Image (cartoon, rainbow, N blue to C red):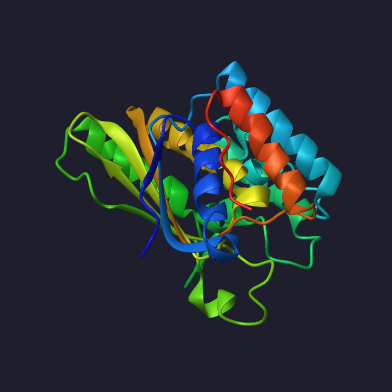
Length: 261
């Protein structure tokens, strides 16, 4: 059996509850874990404090050195967008930001590049911009087309080769518009490390939703994530240290800290 669907009000509480649920499973891993976040752009002072706790933990233990914001930026480069706006930030990202990521021998961290420079028959295609413009046109004319906004990340011609370690874990995103002109997003992950990546993933997806909604003239709705395989990793620490992190974050959020051994 799969774990029950996890529904939480914001990214911080969704991260903690999903981590709690999966940690309690055999070998601290599960399949078909579904997480719903009612407001993926909400960032209260308490949520900010949770991010700070996770950052401190990752900074002390993780060999990757990736903090929550690092992971979030792989999905949506918020600072670049804030500084340059759309559509200019696409070009700035490819000229100034992406070349620094290419120095890595691994393929991790290139989600946004996949969105705006997906390999096509005649060269790179900006799938994100194409989707946003299509949505914008349909919203402007009050079209009934609400279920045609798909964004692939996985590239079968490239990603099926070589070692999957360090590769793309986010596979696909499906955006929807409901009858109240709210933007909904479902994101599918082939593999998901909940301690090192989940919180940053949720925040990054929320920021991507905020961008799409602002450009298309709609409101941000809920986010749903499907982790087809999920693991509560320790990010290089001990299980006791991980449980202590969960307990600190639970205290901040005012929830119980029942984490199985």
